[in-house]
Image (cartoon, rainbow, N blue to C red):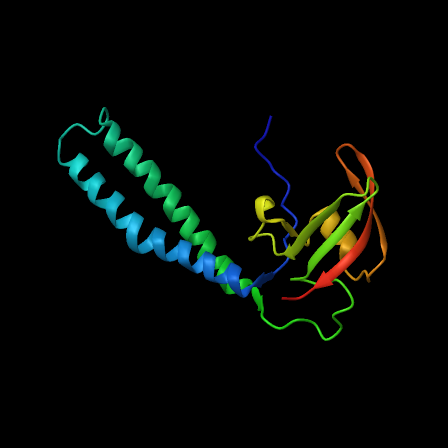
Length: 165
């Protein structure tokens, strides 16, 4: 048995200005606030002597590794993403950043916003343009019919409104 994992498909390289601001704020918090606090607590725990049985030291070092890994990821990701600040010239079609209202085959209205993979937030209705529904929506117009595969089976949607706030 090997530990080989096939490489992941690269996600979309787009992000909204709001998403970029949130990633930068997380990076700043981790690097300037949380990491210095954890470093200080690890230093204090190390001064107590035997590190092999010192839970504060062991868990502090583990948390430092987690913070460093996330900082590396955020730094690299912020360098490679493209911030989309302007709405598309054709606002009658669904593109990145669009707020979309859909009516499903049961008559229920659901609203989504197409965002990059770093901004997914189901509670706010933010879905990735890499998600099956996001890919199905890209380029569609008002009153278009969309069929997408869900875990419970295929679902049909009709585009009710498109907005770029």
